[in-house]
Amino acid sequence: RVTPAGVVTEFPVPTVPASLERIAVGSDGNLWFTARGSNRIGRITTAGKPRVLIADDSRIVRASIVQHIRGRFDIREVTDGEAAWQAILLDSSIRVVITDLTMPKVDGFELLNRVRSSKVQRIRELPVVIISGEEESHERDRAASLGATDFIQKAVGASELLARMEVLVRLST
Image (cartoon, rainbow, N blue to C red; front, top):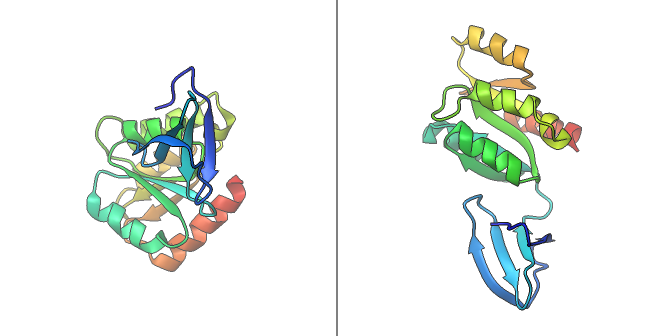
């Protein structure tokens, strides 16, 4: 956890300082460390792979998407919209968000609204891809009016999903 007194430094793997005092996996999925004799907090990143956040309360849907994009992207998964929002706020390495519309705590519509109305440009311009079913045209229209970047069906094929993610990552950089 980053404290106000701490300074965050990111180190791509395997460039990690040798003088580590503590290292732990944070609730955000990152490896965090503190250096000996310092209040500096650092994060170890996965160099070279753009990060995709997948927000869906269905483990099956998340697993399907992960299976399709696993080799090309660093993936972070959350099960509700509030956890997705916290991840977006805290993790500046997220390049694309894939979200379901119906989730606990905060639904996909509210998540999309928070992203598009953020005062932080990086967040406001994040590509947000909505996971939808064929029968959900009204929900897709509502999400489009809130600023959704793209839509994928729950049964999307690997090549289509990879192509879309690659384009969105390039556009967001």
